[in-house]
Image 1 (cartoon, rainbow, N blue to C red):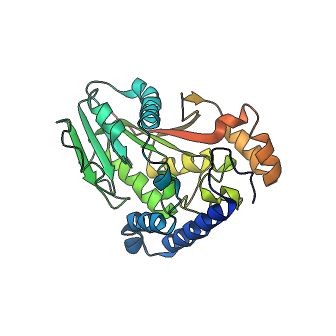
Image 2 (image 1 turned 45 degrees about the vertical axis):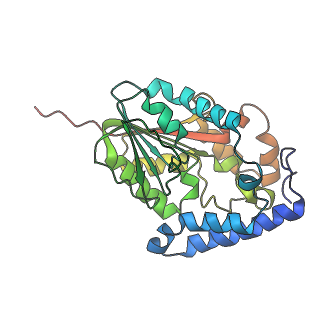
Amino acid sequence: MFRKISQSEKRTPQELKQHYKIEKELATRLKRASPSVRRQSYGTVYEELLKRVPHHPQLTLGVNPKRTQNKVTRQLRLLNGFLRPDTVFLEIGAGDCRLAVEIARRVKKVYAVDVSRNLAQRSILPKNFELIISDGVSIPIPSESISLAYSYQLMEHLHPDDAVEQLRNIYAALAPGGTYICITPNRIVGPHDISKYFDEIATGFHLKEYTSTELGNLFRDAGFSKASAYVGGRRILRWIPIGPYEKILSGLSYPVRRQIIRWLPFGALWDIAMIGTKNQPTAHS
């Protein structure tokens, strides 16, 4: 194994290895699939993983209401400075939609986009809330209607080609001057999926992890007039010029890099929060 097993991990090395092999097999299937097949498979491969890995944490840890609420609270702390009563908010990869439902109390309208209907058990939803089912790439909402778009730990799960297309679709959904906040693990301090115990780069369901430089280039290619990388995506956002740190770290061997990132300020590089702004229309004389 590449890393020491964390104290919070309750599984044996043999169980971790089984999880790794199965997840890597399914991830390889996704990477090799055609775009049309792949977009029908994002949900099914996760279902297959859970069937074949009965000791997967999603099955054994269960739902912890306190942990779930803490996660929502942390994200609200990040987003509060961007929310206004007239905001039209979009969350991509909304999951159980707890965050989106909470934000609906503070803004004009909320769209929650996901690949499955995890809200089926909820009987009461805010009137200004709309759940949209997607193939994981499309953003089927009115163009130029969104003030603030947001995703958390999503982009790394997409095939790189799908991530590029999804980013363009998010850009199209944003109103001029709108903002997209994308929080994703930093490749320099990865891998962050199950392959962290076995490989130097992600080979599991993190189909691609990014550096801030790579992600910033994608944002600009998609049309964003401004794209800035922030760190501290789990607590508060701070802007620092992290590109030079990434460049230095990427030139080091994996074991040395792993040692260095445990020290401050490098530990702050764990997540990237890329904030992109859509062009405002140019005034004509």
